[in-house]
Amino acid sequence: MSQTVSSPLYAAIDLGSNSFHMLVVRHIDGSVQTMAKIKRKVRLAAGLDENNALSKEAMQRGWDCLSLFAERLQDIPKENIRIVGTATLRTATNVGIFLEKANQILGYDINVISGEEEAATIYKGVAHTSGGSGRRLVVDIGGASTEMIIGEGFSAKALTSLKMGCVTWLERHFKDRQLTATNFDNAIEAAKSTLAPILDSYTDIGWDVCVGASGTVQALQEIMLAQGMDEVITHAKLKRLQKQAMAAERLEELEIEGLTLERALVFPSGLSILIAIFELLEIDSMTLAGGALREGLAYEMVDELRQEDIRARTVASVQSRYQMDVTYGEQVASLAQYLFEQAGAEEWVSEPQAGILLQTAAKLHEIGLTIDLKKGGEHSAYLLQNLDLPGFTRAQKHYLGELVRRYREQLTSLPEQHAVSGTSSKRILRILRLAILLTHRRNPDLVAQVKLTAQDDKLTLNLSKQWLEANPLTAAELEIESNRQTDIGWPLNIECL
Image 1: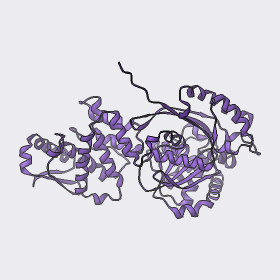
Image 2 (image 1 turned 30 degrees about the vertical axis):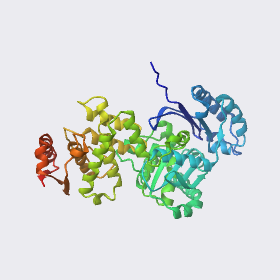
Image 3 (image 1 turned 90 degrees about the vertical axis):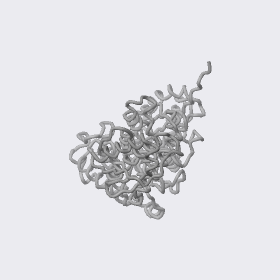
Image 4 (image 1 turned 135 degrees about the vertical axis):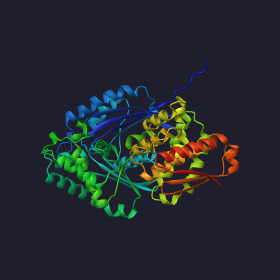
C-alpha cells in the first residue's frame, strides 16, 4: 500500500523589538498553510540603555524565548528555515554577545537584516497575501522601526525604514505613563518630523491603496470591529480612539473595548505614529494586510508561489484541496459575469471588488458539498468565513460566506456587511442565484441565451419561450425564484424573448 508523502515544513523567525515570533507553514495545493504561530513578548527594545547597549536582563529574555523555539526547529529541514533580527539588533552596540549565545541555542545563524531588507521582505509578505491591483503604500509599525514601502505587484518602488516604533515612542513620549493631550501631541509631531524627509518622494510616486501590516494596525482593526465599526481605518476613527485612550489618565488604567492587555502598553505610542502618517501623507483610508515580514520570509522559500494574482492562486488552491468541480465553477462564474455586465456594471465602476467577489462566490459556492448536501450552504459559509484566504480581507470573507449560505433554495436578506455597498451586495446575491439555477445541468452548451436588465431593485430576466418549454424543470424553478426574490422586496420578472 502506497504512503502519502507529507508536505515539508518551513519556519520563519522574526526577532522583533517588542516580540519574537515563529511562523511554521507547509506548502500544499498551491498555497501556504499555517501550522503554528508562536509569539513571546521579549521587549528587547526596552532593554537598550542610553548608549544603545542591551541589558543582560533583556538578552536573557531573548535567550529564554529562543530556547523554546529551538525545540520546534528540530523538526524542520535546515534549508527551510529563515531567522532574522530587526531594528533593535541593528542598533545594539553589544549585539555580538547576544548573537553568539542565540546562535548556539538555535543551532542556526541569525541574520540581522538592514532596514531596507526588512522593508523589502515586509512588502513581499504583503504582496503574497493581499489582493487588489494598482500601486500600494504599505505601513508597518514595529517596536523600534517603521517601514514605509510603495510597490506594485511584487515589485517595490520605494523602501524606507524609519527609526521610530511603538516601544521607542513609548519610552520617549509616554515615559511618565500619562495619557495627556501634550504627550500625544509631542509623539505625533515627533513622528511627523521623522517622516518629513520622505514626504516629497513618496507623494511624487503616489499610490492607489494603503495597507497596514503587523501589530499596531491589527490591534486597531480588532478594536474597531469590537466596537461595531467596519474594518477600514480612517483618520476620524484614529482620533476617536485617541479620545478613548485619553479618557484614562494613566497608561496602567487604559481600557478600550477590543484592546488586549498584552497590547495596551504600546497602543498609545503606535496610535500616535499612525495618526502622524495619516495626517502628513493625507491618507484617506487603510486596510489590514494579510501578512508582513514572517510571511515574506516563508513565501519566498517556496518558488512555486510567485504569482501575480494572489486571489486566483487562493481560489485554485481551495478548489484543489476540496476536490471541487473547477469546470462547473468557471461556467457559473462566466454566466454570472455576463449577467453582472448586462445589469449595469457601469454603475459599479467605483466598486471593482463587487465583480471579483461575485466571481469568487461562483467558483467556490459548492465547497460545502464536500461535507453534506442537506446543509451545503451552511457548510460553505462556515468554510469560507474561517479558511485562511490570502488576498481577501476579513470583511470580504464574511460577505462571501453570507453569499454562499444563500446560493440555493432558502433566500433571506443579507446581514450587515462592509465589503461592498448595500445595493451591490443584494444584486450580487441575486445574480449568483440566477447563474447557478440556469447552469444546473452543468453543460455550457445547454445554457439559454438570456438578457438581464435592472431598474433600481427590479430585475427582469428574458429567455426564449422555446428554451423554457424544452427545460420545464428550470422554468418551474425560475418561477419559484421569481416569487422568492419578489417576496422579500427584490422584484424579479421572468419574461419570454
